[in-house]
Length: 202
View 1 (tube, rainbow, N blue to C red):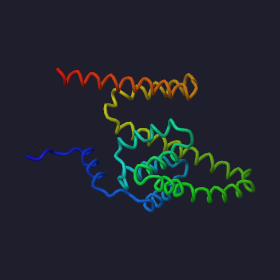
View 2 (view 1 turned 120 degrees about the vertical axis):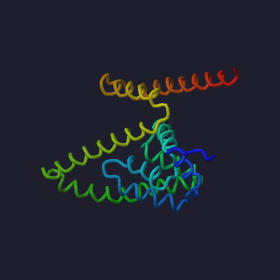
View 3 (view 1 turned 180 degrees about the vertical axis):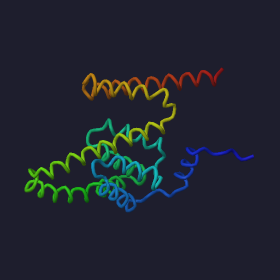
View 4 (view 1 turned 90 degrees about the vertical axis):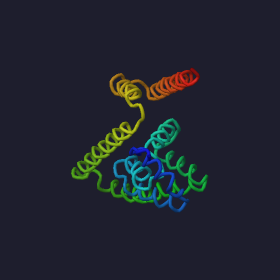
């Protein structure tokens, strides 16, 4: 009798069944991300990697992004490097970063020249404020979707709430919150694994 598949297992099987992307595919994919991500490219990166191309599962994306947030530099560039290395080594990392940066670099160069000339116009200032709010909304929506896909989220979401309070309400330094959160969550994961091992032995 076949075992019914959940949505997560279907997504995992779809990822494993799909061919590993080469440098050209990574360049094209991250170029689409870079050219689509007005107000921040993280939501578009997740859509590309998890929903459109299915190069990663939702859980794998969360893990990789968490790792990239602890590395120096922009998170999405670190993500492009990590995904590129995972798929096809250093060539994939170079292709991912070039695809992500080339289009936005040229557009930002042009817009910087225009802003230097027209940036003081009130209509331009209002437009920039609106773009900022849209970017914030996209990042919040992505955070919510990532939280929905976290396994055992009832256990780990309090850590996210504690980090939010520490940063926004208490104004603690970001490195302190990140290191403290990493120590607590790693300790909890180790404790859960140790408890499961004891249950298996008994």
